[in-house]
Length: 465
View 1: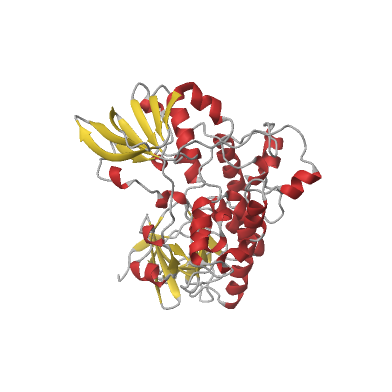
View 2 (view 1 turned 60 degrees about the vertical axis):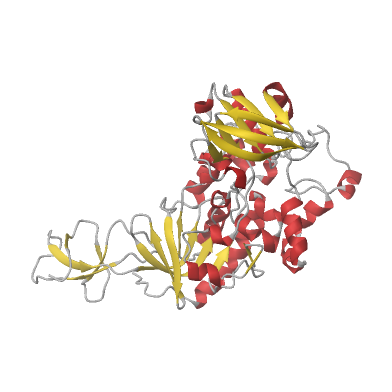
């Protein structure tokens, strides 16, 4: 036999006009996982168990979505409502479930912490109401575990066909993309949406890169901090991630120090408890990124951002809504974290299984400390070159500025059919892309564009029942 043999089982369906093509019962409607079978024995009665020889080709799909965070799930929800054939791969809401410390509070307000669905019913507010959980649009911080539960519920309701597998390779030859999954499956797609989150893009200070992971890690490597109880830990950074992880380490029993390069830590103002006046809204209109005209423009006119000069775009992406922590963390930090502001690492080395840090203050003085572990909460920069699963020729085909992809008004890269959303789209659409509220703008826009292209470019090789 030229190919392997398999047993035809109850639930397989004849779909070919010659009655020699079968779809396995595990295949989902709307996908092209049909298996062509060349029967090797005539005269077998219908319904009998029998052996047949089969050949499985490369599966084809119209749209492939890589990543199952707020952007990927929201786009999938909109595509599903439009009847567009797609497949989506990834662990649902993985960044929040496994790459931020347990017990963390979201930086965004409740009204700006929802995924996007076509009817607007799958909001965090509605979820909390259904579950009897406390919620307020602005005055109650959102706990990360509540957000994770909400986002998983959203996925089960609006994107039930999510495949919890990883794309390990993406390439393109001619007009067709080829994706390889971590279980060895290969598929082709006409259109690809790269919706990976920030965990690909963590920035580690040069002074720490040579240390082993047992001694120095990026904050994205941590969720459960209980293993650091009784240890001395130094956290590097001055933003919300640094403050959160330092506080939670301290509350988990670690002796914690926070090393901050700037001269002060910034915290958001606590809610006033009163409605904003009309004058407040005129001076500093509300937005999902916080109050103020710059934030309002970033959320409500993101399509204009890519027309700004490149150097200015980079400055805005780096600085707007920069290091600032949530107001509830200030008192908790002061209760248990030793803070050194105006201080930076000058040198780091391994000594007897611990880390020796040489620190320099803004006044020029130096001091040395020895610690069990260093955690760098030093942010992210979504450089296209960091997407190691994307082939070199595809990465080279993507026009970039400061390492970030330059995108069209519909989030398409210079590689035809490849779309990038989320933090990696910040150079073209601004700071909004760093926040999940950006999915409200991105998901319907990208889904409509993909739907129009899908009608013109049906997936190559798809067999339909």
